[in-house]
Amino acid sequence: MPEFTYRAAAGGKVLISWRGRVVTTLAGTEAAKFLERAAAVNAAAALQLLLARATRNFKRGNERGRA
Image (tube, rainbow, N blue to C red; front, side, top):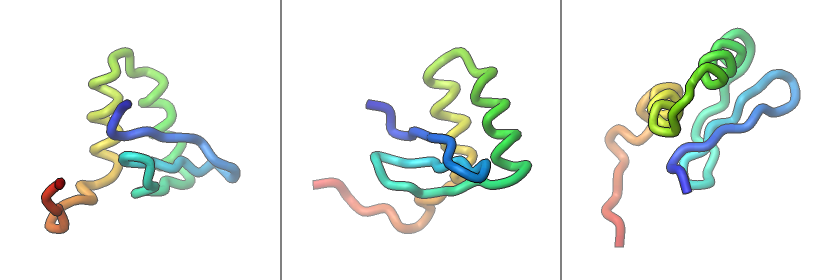
């Protein structure tokens, strides 16, 4: 299962999730640009990188060790 996933929601929004939890919501022109870029990506690894960049480094400073 990929770390990051996304789905287009009503109203032109894009919800980006990490391990099943929504971490970022894009709206308006930002969401439209993201969807264009995601459609142009061919490799799964490239899509994961695009999604990680769209989250704007949401994990910075609040990581916890995994048990």
